[in-house]
Length: 281
Image (tube, rainbow, N blue to C red):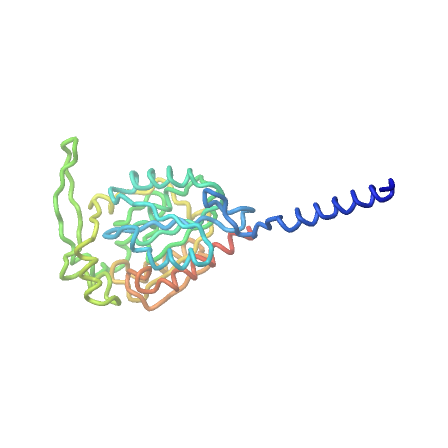
């Protein structure tokens, strides 16, 4: 073979090698996730869903399925329902383990928990309040709620004493099983509400008088969902909170207090709206 032939043969081999490498190249989608589930390229935030009183993380199941289908990394950590200080400290520690931007969502009592937990965390890009209570710094749920007519649920509580391991005592609040459907979840089937009554997690009564030491909604974008038929938190209070927080978006739907269960698509739509807005900030 001549020198020219050898040169052309080498060029052909280089061209073939380049073609093979090109065929094997993996193009990473803009919203792909690494092994930890963290979004690459900062395109999509992690959505953290925090449940409220009388519930657990499974109350978000319908929302979680929809968000995951849309490609979001979702975390629904437990809320111990022992009081704002303890619950927000726990949530704050969990949030600090998440890399990248976060959209933080709270239902009901979790509204005050996320407000305090997100204070000072720059990667929390938006706060979403679903049928939630949103006290300001120095306010409690009880003091804020007192500005509006008492919600029907206040006549449905069952008080049960408990004892801690150190000997201190307290009082847990449950919803009376026979009244849960009418005061908490009237837009769900009776049978589903009966299951919720049997599996409900109580909240310490003292949580309602805990005063917030910080209110992240003062300096973070806020999104609010109001349930027009809410019998646990007065809808007028929810509207007042949205206006006070200068919410970027407020959505009203014909829902009971548990809109995350009865109207998961509407709740998901608001969360996705907050997430998409955060991607452009």
